[in-house]
Image (cartoon, rainbow, N blue to C red):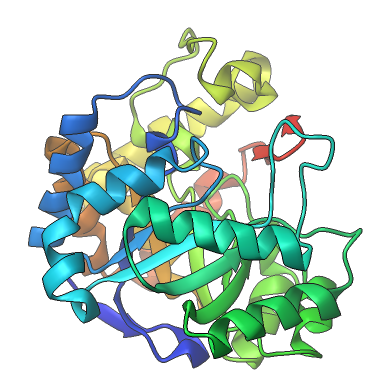
Length: 324
């Protein structure tokens, strides 16, 4: 597993991180024992960065992650980097809440759920336009000063929100959605991150399953899977994007890769991207994803990919307010 320094945070992390959104209930039921085995197998294969969030099952994902890494967290803490997120309260009358009090209570809840005395990287999950950047960034700096978190970042911020945060304390990392069907960060967010040495952790590099090769135009999802409510996973949008996936799969095969490996390697090849966050519910699925960290795409490969995805449809995803 290749490692990289995560921007100005200075954290030495694996280029592929293990993400745990799928272990919070938003993607339907999961087998906890299988999930723990997947986390542990990822660690055995060299992953040292694990990303979770308070909102993933209201702490359930953090609890599973803490259980899976218990021995190392208790006896070899500095060998793993735990990143979590807070600042949202789904289902409440204020789904985005980056006020000082909620952030503080969230950090305390995450520390308990994970079973640790500090969090390596704490990220504001979504921007909160009703809370001044001074309050949010100031609260995170207080938590750094107290030793409860080591580094502070944000997720889903645009460049103006990054700049406002930066006025109070440096943004060390940003976690945006980024994949072949969602590229809006390329215009301003990625350039800003490169200019300010902000570590970029791209989530959903596989397009929430679109880029796995496992979906068909007739695919359906359970009512407890957020994709069942998304326009990206039905109708003409799904059909057009799966036609693109078919062509990408052919290209991947010509390079001896799976479509998932090609998609993840493409994300990692983009200037300014440090880490791709991938998830898995079982150990058998994780090896395929992690292999993408060792793939070096050529300029010809990247050109071919651009030609293919030109026929695709841009999509969005879930937010604290719901699904588009």
